[in-house]
Length: 559
Image (cartoon, rainbow, N blue to C red; front, top):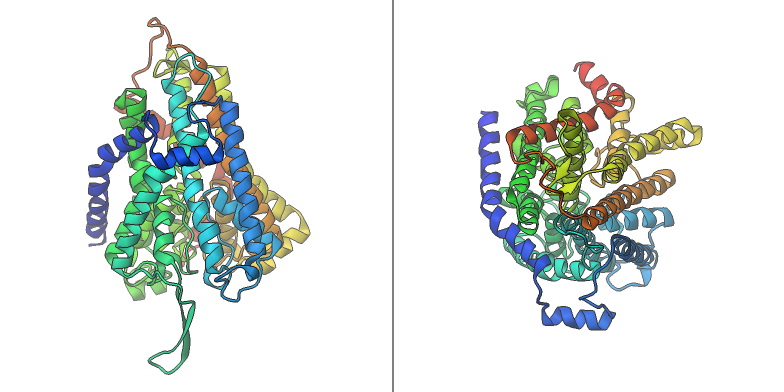
């Protein structure tokens, strides 16, 4: 019965995504290729002094990305530190320096890692002027970088990749903002809270005192999902009834997480003028997502132990409203994108269920990945696959007419090394220095033994890959974790972006490869299988040794 529900849920989610694949993908391609600017866009260009016809080299594009993100980091940090003097602060104090840095880094990097209880830490001004704004622009930055890489593949003998400022404004005004307005209205109609009521004291039916928080939730929930941002207005995240009221809003939230990332391969095909590789990328994303959903669901449906047997299933940490399948489908979507939202507590999953969620992130978040980030990560993997296949078969390593040479493979190699180096180095430093080890064990880990180790592993992988979800028992609000995870988040976001843009610049400078270069057929099932195999081979063996200390040790230890 459980697998029948899983199949029904999967098909129910896949159908609307499939129906929107072509129109949404084509619309996004039009956004970034249209020659006409809207009046409001021209007004913004004039006010900001932007020359919209002036294209940028990859270095200039990268400098613009970094400068804009740095400005956002500083502004969000200051908003948190100045919170008591802001309107609608709800009487909340200033956020501590280390937590302010961590939160600013997290939201600027489209990670939305939250080492705090949102409704008791952030007032409405910080939520709206700081966090919600960064949800829009950080998501737009990811899309801009993906489009720049696509242009690099499409252009020939050009030293430019477009204009970051134009791309950023168009991504927000033509895509994210109008969609978010529509989605927010739907959420309000469904019962998601949207007010400035603050905290309301109540008396429960049992006579106990309670507090119901309010706030502008629906407007933030819309971009939280559409931008694969994650996080939550409330500490319970999408398990909170004021943030996710019903079963159909739960499905809608999963759909919102996936719809833009899954449509971007169509955008890629439209811009480069060849949809075949776009379909290959889409197929690889879909297969990896299906495998992850199957493994996580299998682990939870077959949960062993006294409590699961008495309850009929592994229901610990899961909302009774949604049950196992709708929880694991949400978990698959959030670990396959950069959306750290959750409608269940990942730390309460079975040991193997938590492990599969962890490994899904470790793949590189490309099934389908965050908005933009999933596409440029998958294209990087395709570059590696083309290069390795060319070496094995004696064929020219050519990607849509562009030769994959030593320079491109160096950039791609650095790209794929960033996440494991950051995650494993962060854990190694944390456990190697006695004072840091004590801080994490005594203050952060909510459980001893193998499960506590899994909490730490999940946190560092989540930060390095810019996911933002966490094992619920882990309290990351300590000085070392706030600073270290914040730095890891920034490096995990912007080093791969630099590599992707450098690769785009190298491709754009090339002319089309001569017809004598025997190009590999990238639209066949063999290439899709090879691409999936390379992704798994690159990602999973790196983390296998530490899995034996955490979820594998816990899972094999028995009930």
